[in-house]
Amino acid sequence: MKELIEHPEQWRRLVSGEVSVDSAVEELLRWVTPAMHFGRRALVDVEVGGQRIGAGDVVTLWNSSANYDEEVFDRPDVFDLGRTPNKHVSFGYGPHFCLGAYPGRAEIHAMLTALRTHVSDAVLTGPGRPIHSNFLHGYSSLPVSLRPAG
Image (cartoon, rainbow, N blue to C red; front, side, top):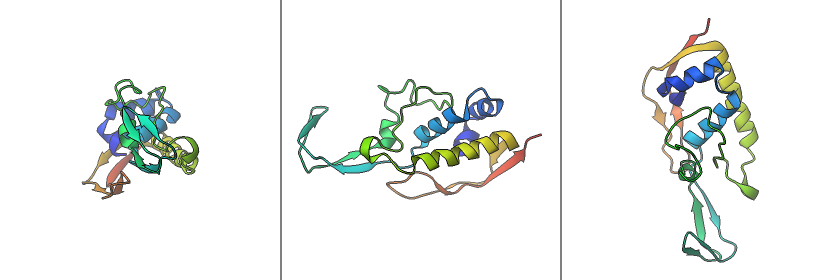
């Protein structure tokens, strides 16, 4: 909600149908990256970006950084609900891909569909209360007022 309110041109694009709910879901996941990082232990010796990683070393994937990689995303610093392709790693990748990815996407899809169908305008009515975590990004509270469509 915060991102849609702070980017009114994107809200307009969503409500007008200029962008699909499917692409909006993916861009929201890329932009806010709910789980900021994951740690893994290397199984074999490997070199990544000129850095040697030994078998057994703990490595961290910073999803929140990877989702803004300028070698992967055109204009990664721009919030664009119509972004395609959108190869974000908000749910990880490969054998450790998050099992909650599908229900998570379905929940966001349902929320965006309801918002664009039933809400004409949204405003923040107070400061949000962020979750204080070095793992999760989000809010425990975000006061918002919604104006019905129609």
